[in-house]
Amino acid sequence: MVNHNKDQLNEIFHALSDPTRREIIHSMHQKEKTVSELAQPFDMSLAAISKHIKVLERAKLIERSVNGRTHLCSLNTESLSKATEWLQFYEKFWSNRFDLLEKELLEAKKKEH
Amino acid sequence: MVNHNKDQLNEIFHALSDPTRREIIHSMHQKEKTVSELAQPFDMSLAAISKHIKVLERAKLIERSVNGRTHLCSLNTESLSKATEWLQFYEKFWSNRFDLLEKELLEAKKKEH
Image 1: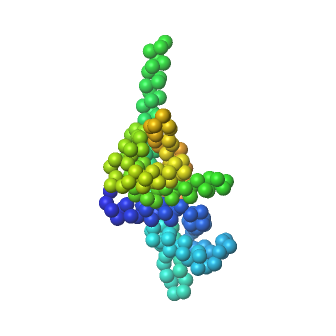
Image 2 (image 1 turned 90 degrees about the horizontal axis):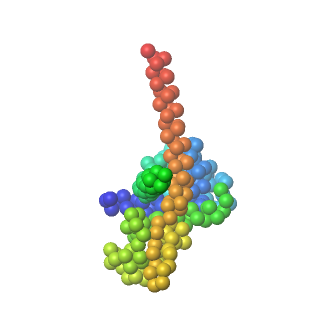
Image 3 (image 1 turned 120 degrees about the vertical axis):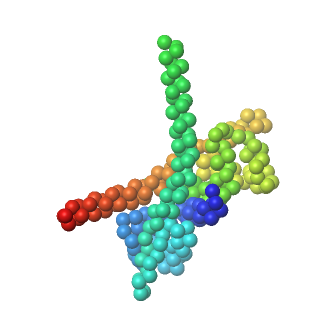
């Protein structure tokens, strides 16, 4: 794994470790939103929400397109996939081990009969 | 989603945001290890590694069993799955949207001919 990948994984997992940031991701999964639309459900200042958005942008989890005075944020699922891929490696490894264990158990039971 | 789930997701993603902690997880994916076995590949004090292990334990990503003076650490894949499930919700949502878009495109092409 090259280092910039490592760094991006640090940023992605760090961004996801905060419940407000996860809610921001959740709130934009159906369609892109402006910064003020993203801020609306939270009892927080626009400055605080902007900080959270910046953390999400640094992790490349969201992308911002600027059209005049309107900033539209959209979800970048490629970055979410990077995190899932990392996690799935270990899940697959363990589910393979469980399959093997199950097979061995079944064979042991057959021998018993 | 209940709050303790939210808190655990915070802890899990925070634990995964550090490259040393991800390497610790990687190094124990094939078998359980003692704390000194986990520390061995790193150019770090045992105290520093212990801190990382505590963060992983708090997130329930690893479990420690104590047998006399030996502390054996093993991976808890259930916690890894919680993080994967959270991420996959958005991936699935987007892959469904892409499938829908593809279908619409194909139908538009058919009408053209």
